Image 1: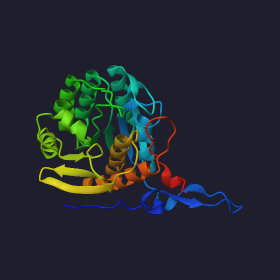
Image 2: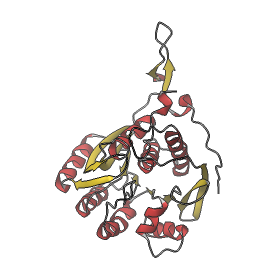
Image 3: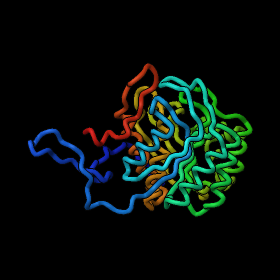
Image 4: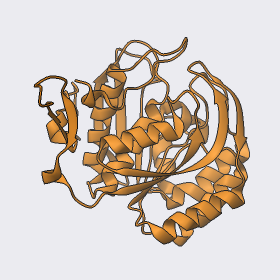
Length: 298
């Protein structure tokens, strides 16, 4: 078991494909793509909702994947009315339209990973499961978004059952927070048992995050069929954040799309997400918005 007790600051030149340069006047540093690190761009296909506040959902996916040097193809699962405080309404899109968009992209683009977030309806879950059955070799990163950051439920029991029965068996890694893990498997007495239930359902990797648990530190635990593969401890930052789970799952997806080992991708993504929260912006009256491009502004 590996334990990381203190997050290390991310090095822009080490972790990201950009480097600072200066204008001819010698002022105003700008970003320039480092062509020495250029290679075929890894593409992640994201199924998630649209959050007009920009804190979570597809915008979070796009920013996090871009920060790791990848490209995000996006398919909207639901249109939401929400701000930095909570969600007021969630309107799922047409499952038929979603299927058409997915097939169009898959026919044209070499997708290296798939990230799933907010689903919106049972029909959307069934549609995505059908798509995944056609492309079983592509790793799937599942972030089971069951409640909004403000606490509003955006799923029902039928959707939870469909996630367990249809999406978990097709996923490579699932990234619930502790509340989502318990909601999916309420009969489990511990988070370890929740993780084992997800593995029994067919998902080989489970990362349960501990931000909702009490304590001075946050403990995130990565499981596989052998039990705990890694446990990381992070300093708890003050305040609450809108889109941290989306950021983490999208980061893992982008790194796995690059061919990174699951354990390493999990740890790298946690480092990155912690820094995004540490640099969060307060743009509204509710939760902070992760600054997923913090490294470009230092």
